[in-house]
Length: 83
Image 1: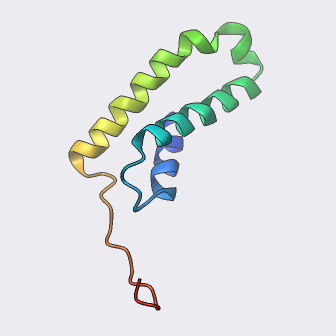
Image 2: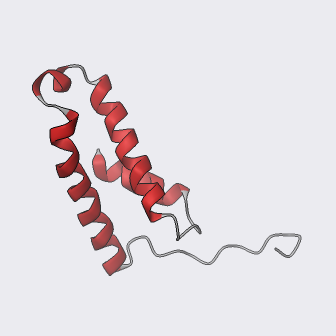
Image 3: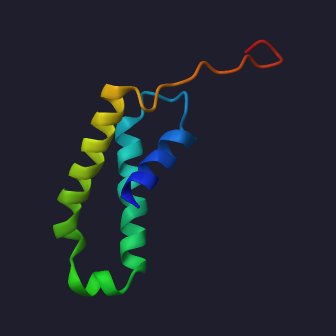
């Protein structure tokens, strides 16, 4: 789930390469919403204890993706009005 959220955020923000911190914050927020909605998990784990591990997973995946070009930006299509 964590990696799918990160991939979805990356895909939806194509062409906006300078918003890494905002994308990470959005990923953490989305994961926290899922965590809190799960009910059972909140009884067994605390978000405060899971947060560092989840952040490390996100950072490791994003680092891998950046090193390997996984999220390589495709040149955007020219717009009909020349932009």
